[in-house]
Length: 101
View 1: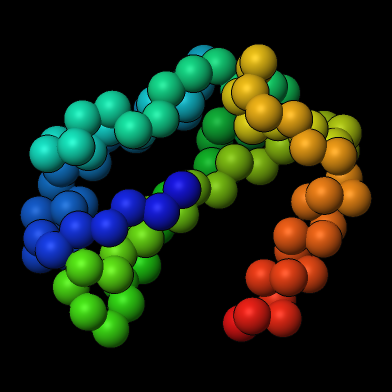
View 2: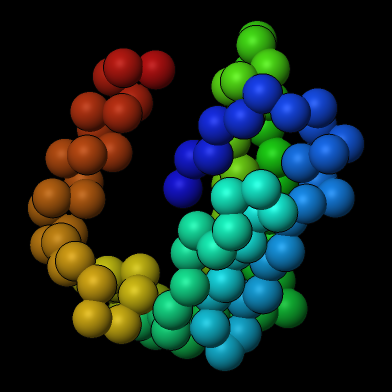
């Protein structure tokens, strides 16, 4: 998930509400709820984390959420009932991203 904003970083941090279990909910003050739903598989909520990454300009801000899986099973989707992808589709996307970066 990527969020773009022209607001100062201290404002962004204060405006984020993140709830991980039993649903993943992300709410940003001025944008409202941007993610909300039950995860497709169980995670280790106590090991989950999030970080805000700022780019060169003030409107290049990214929110990264890390959700450690509780098992080694491949996730076809992040959310229950969400868009499913095969492991080949995910690997191809990762390879494309690594080539671009």
